[in-house]
Length: 111
Image 1 (cartoon, one colour):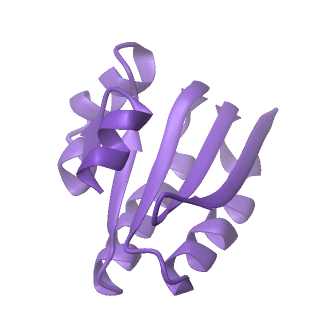
Image 2: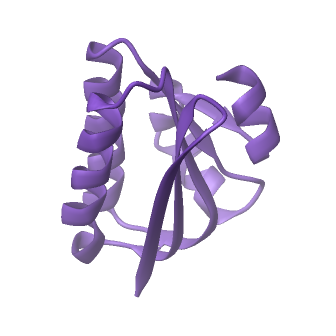
């Protein structure tokens, strides 16, 4: 089970994910990222603090979103504190495709 909430916050588009991000979440994630890419905000902040698990399909969706956002002149900032999700992003080498932050405040400050 997963949750995805999103709203414009502080000049960025904030996406807050929770639970398990797997194949079931990719369609909704893609739609939200597309809205964020088309929106007026300069950056997108993806908060993964409440995420317990990310599978390869959801990780691929995040990577495609980072590329799409970059093509539209925006930057993806991902919030992942120390733990399994951050380790996954670092071990797979995908963390270099976006800005990785320990806290939401750090992400907003960098955005």
